[in-house]
Amino acid sequence: MSISSKLSLVVSLGSCVALALVGCGGDDDPGGTSNEGANGAGAGSSTAAGDVPEEVNQIDGVSVSTIAGSDVAGNSDAPPTTFSNPANVVLGPQAKLFVADFDNGRVRTIDTSGNVATLTDQTGFARPFGLVGSQDGKLIVQTDFNEQGGNGGTSGGVLWLVDPGTGVAAVLASGVGRPRGLARLPNGMIAMSDVERHDIRLFDPGTSAITDLAGKAGESGLEDGSGGAARFDRPYGMVVSTDGDILVADQNNHVIRRVTTSGEVSTFSGIPGAKGMVDGGRDKARFNKPQDLAIDGAGNVYVSDVGNHRIRRISPSGEVETVAGDGTAGFKDGSGGESRFFGQEGIDVEADGSVLYVADGTNGEVEPYHRIRAVALP
Image 1: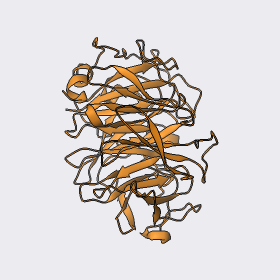
Image 2 (image 1 turned 135 degrees about the vertical axis):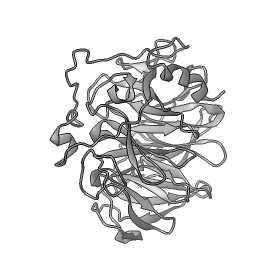
Image 3 (image 1 turned 60 degrees about the vertical axis):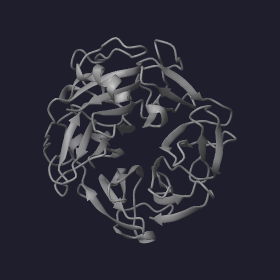
Image 4 (image 1 turned 90 degrees about the vertical axis):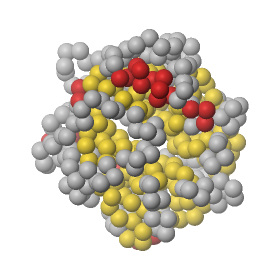
C-alpha cells in the first residue's frame, strides 16, 4: 500500500482520524487573527499580493491535515512525534516519505502506517535540506554545513549518498555550496540550483564531477538566454518536466523558469520580476517568492508559493490554480481554501496527484511550526 492510500484516508475527511503516530490538526489562531511571521503579510494585502488585486481560482474538494509533528520542537520518533524545523520532503524507496529535519540534523522517515523513524543521524551530517532519489534507489542529500561542521555558504556544503536501508551517509562531494534544489534527470545526472551562487549546475553521481549549466556564479539578476548569459536570483526548488527540461522556482524573480539540458533558459510561468497573487494562464499568473516545486505523472506542476502562503498548481496547458492556503501565514487544517501554512519550504506529490506532502517548518523564524502536512486533491 502506498503512502497516499494510507494517508489519504486522513486528509480526505478534513479532520483528524486516529492513525499510528499521526498528529491531530487544529488551528493555532482560533480567534481568526493573522499569525504572521517575517515571511509575509496576510490575505488580500498589497504587500503580499504586489500592486495588483488578488485573483484566486480555488480548486474545490481539497483538504489539508497534519500527519506528523506539532507546534513543539523535538526529535521524538515515538508518539507524540516531534520535528525541529522540517525543511523538505521527498517520496522514495519502499514508499517512504523522507523528511529533512533541518535543525535536528537528521533524515527521518514516515512509512505507510504513519510510523516515524530516524534514518540518518551521524557526526558531520548537519542541516540537511536538498533531497532527491538517485538512479540506484538511494537518497542524495544536500547539507548546508560541511562534514567538519562549518557553514556551507558559497564554497562549503556537502552532497551525501544515504542508504535507505541502513541510514549510513557517505560523502559524494564536498565544497558544493548551497544547492538546495536537486532534481534527477533521465540519464541519472543531478541538476542543482544554488540559492547563494544563483546558478544551475549538473552533478554526476558516478564521478562526482560538477559542470555549469546556466547562470553565473555570484551574479544575481533576471535574464533569459543561454548558459552563462542567463541570470537567476535565488533559484530554489526544481523538478524535471515530462519533456525532460528542468523547471526552477526562481524565488526573488517571482517566476518559474525553464532550463533545457543544453542550458537554454526561458520563462515557464509568471511575469518576470512582478510578484503578486494572480491565477490564470501562464503569461498572466503571478507568484510571490515561489520556493519549491513538485510534479505528478500527468505533468501538473505544484508550486510552494511561500510569499503568498499558498500551494499553487500549473496544469500541462499552463493554467495556474490555487490548491490550498488562505493567504495568511499560520497553521490551520481543513478545506483547501481555509487552510494555512507557514514555512512550506519543501513539497512532493504522489505520481497520481492524489496527495501532496508539505514540510511546514519555521522558515528560519523563531515560530512554533514543526509539522508534516498532507494535502488531498480530488
